[in-house]
Amino acid sequence: MALVVSGLSYGYPGGQTLYRDASFRVEAGNVVGITGPSGSGKSTLGALLAGDLRTRSGQITIDGVPLPRRGFRPVQLIHQHPERAVNHKWRMRSVLRESHEVPQQTLDLLGIRSEWLDRWPAELSGGELQRFCIARALHPATRYLIADEMTAMFDAITQAQIWHALSRIIRERGLGMVVISHESALLDRLCDEQIAVESFRD
Figure 1 (cartoon, rainbow, N blue to C red):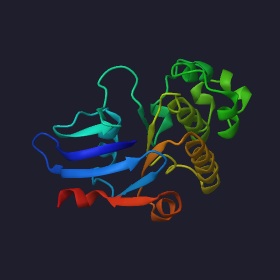
Figure 2 (cartoon, rainbow, N blue to C red):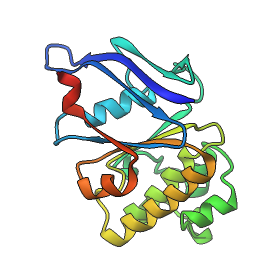
Figure 3 (cartoon, rainbow, N blue to C red):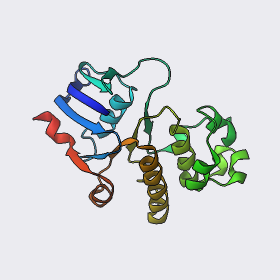
Figure 4 (cartoon, rainbow, N blue to C red):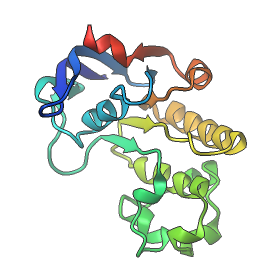
């Protein structure tokens, strides 16, 4: 079982080509790091893997099946800025239920306090909001996670707490994960394999 990228090429209209014939795979249960400087196309690759952008050539498959264009996507993207990923007109309990009924065990592992559930997004810190975004991404049908600079804006203690919790969850569930980051120390600690996005331009 794997998330497989085959012969992917992508570029913006009238702009530079970001990737040429990119091919790699993320096995279920493995963590793959994507490295590269700012502006190198890491976030665009994450959006392609999650199905938020459509490929122009090449293919992305999950266990041999193309990414679905409609309905629930088994590849879930967790963005760097959680405040942009939630509906600010909903209390946090409703933000979670938009995805699924999150088990109490998951809430506990992610350090989500019960009193936060009835708060508005503006009443939580970025680190607290990101915990909710992770919980929402952990739908029972999720097979792969894309973490795009997921903790870059947080202090070291918050980063460590979030990554420790998520690493435990993906191990227990056998999920595959792609970690997009420019922090080499983080990738060295988390990943089974690392790929430089610049290698997709060769």
